[in-house]
Length: 359
Image 1: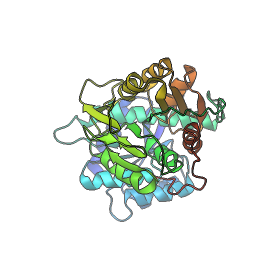
Image 2: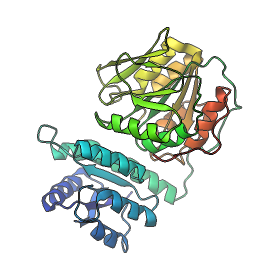
Image 3: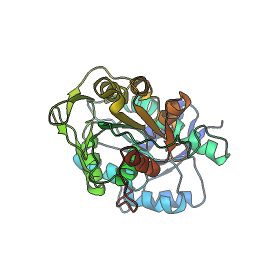
């Protein structure tokens, strides 16, 4: 396949030069255009179609989120990665950008953190490969394993005690869509691993809470999740579950990363299988890599149930594809139908007209 062609949008001349140089050194990636403003980026896109856009959010005039919304008006599926610094403001804007249709984000290096070249090669480039290869395959209308709608007959699991969910790239929007389909009187708690750095998971939880009929929060060590409550593993912490008299108790730890992830879905899923056995109902959503695969095996061995997002709706399909190809998925569906399916399998009537289905 030819090199991935990238438009780099950043108001800093130095940043554009350094990032361009680092990207061009990676291999199979070519920066074919740079822009110092949102207006210039839109001008470039009016006559050029790169494979992806790397977008800073702090720019004079039209900021990154406003630029992204304009891009989405003309290029609905063009991969756009937010590449900006971390700050309290930056976290909020990044979550807003994901809601506006950003494909993913990468935090720019800090003075104390890894160097730019390492961030580009280990975080930015892999996201470009994953996002652009998916777009390339779709443009050729190549067949994709795990077609939309592959589904076993719906079974009502009257003894389900907990729902666990794994998501990564593209996960925030998928989670918003899924959660919006669930009834507010859900009879079990939900625990979620979304691959995100520290700080981001709290903002994500607040955003999901505002758009969901359920109560959503970033989990804290010792929390008890009651029916209808959703706990999201905080960035840089694994989350495990324990049964208690009051409900499902959350335990956090900073054990070694698994699948290069902390939090890891495998850790959450294994703990759920050990504690709840056949009473676990799991869902694996969009994301890179295969985190959640071994945990899903543990759930199935314990006679629990695993569902997966279909590839056509996934921003990056690696995680749900691994579940489907391993034969672990009892149903393969887009997020809005997964939400309905989860409710049905609990014997509940899902929301017909969901509110706030976008992040």
